[in-house]
Image (cartoon, rainbow, N blue to C red):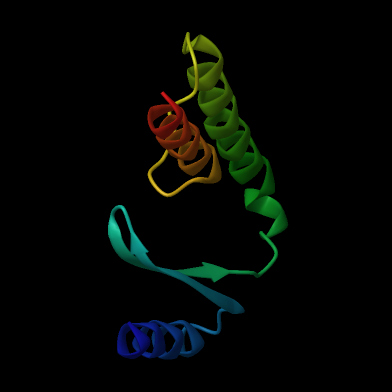
Length: 94
């Protein structure tokens, strides 16, 4: 991962990007590395970029709002570990 991260940063510097690299090792999708360009959006493109960001956020909120029932629990999350612990205690107490 470090080699990929270094290559991404080098390529971004060659493009004069202001960068921030982020990464997660061992996610459920594998190891993820991303690079973000932190430059300000040029004024002629700001309206289009803002509209696209608003559209994506609205779509995400609509998707989450449309789902019924309880939120899914991710493996390794505190909520799931608590449920597993309670189940184990109830099982041994019974």
